[in-house]
Image (cartoon, rainbow, N blue to C red; front, side, top):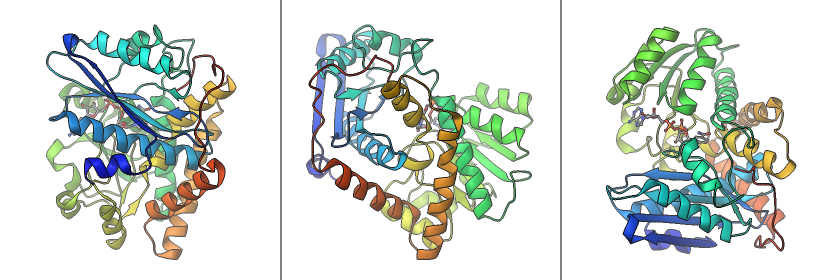
Length: 358
Ligand code: NAD
């Protein structure tokens, strides 16, 4: 979709933060706050063009709205993208984002995403209370609930593929970062046969030595004969070309925006490949972080594991209706936002929250 078309599609806000002297360029996108404040982390990435960063912020913010709707979280979608340039002063970038989030007064809560580490969140937290604080004051490492949700989702996928449990299930995991490695730990513990790939050789070596998993070259990850392909690196991995090479029976992982375009979901469905919509299966961090913020307490693991139950129901609906699961899920999410939100915008009248959110 073209940039202007994207901006015109129901977004509430897109702001540009700049500090040329320190090489800072960031975008803050708010998609929809009709059901409550926007939730969404900070991504820092070396985009080829600044416009790609803005586009990413918009797409990721929209996905957060649908994630909230499906997860039953009274909130909406937002996202911050820092365009990582050679001249970027990292601390200044996170400080500027923190100041801006604070100025929004609770309309937007932020937290981690790709490229943002706990030390970066410490910088943000110096300037705003509306951030998932690392350490004891915050909700903890959000990759943990994300991995738990993805694991529950893979169990649901396995059941749909006719496996009573994970014993012997062949899973190929792309990306051994915060989420991927935790997911591999869980899969191996339950008897799955796991193959891993990462551009970080050390991460692969550690997983092979510590867990006895197999490795595959990053360029050959789709060609592995597997039951499940679990993308846990970046988005856009399912596209025209990769679809031709995919040998797995299902795609279920933590990455956001796995499908390069909606038609790729339709094509997966046509080929009989099960697909776990990203905005459902990876919602563990959102559920944990947002509920921690809104209620002051972390939800029990069963709240996250419900992702598996919901995915199982969705895959069954998809089979019965012969419709791609992400289309069914998206329709459901849009309906919920329209019914519950009634076109409102969330404008905090007083400061909301204790600073522990996502
Ligand atoms: P991360 O940065 O910790 O890990 C990503 C890993 O992918 C790194 O080890 C990196 O080396 C690897 N990688 C990058 N390109 C690769 C490639 N081409 N092939 C193989 N490996 C590659 O990120 P994360 O926090 O683990 O998140 C992973 C994905 O899950 C992201 O798309 C993120 O948006 C999504 N996600 C994360 C969370 C969370 O709680 N952390 C929540 C929801 C969604």
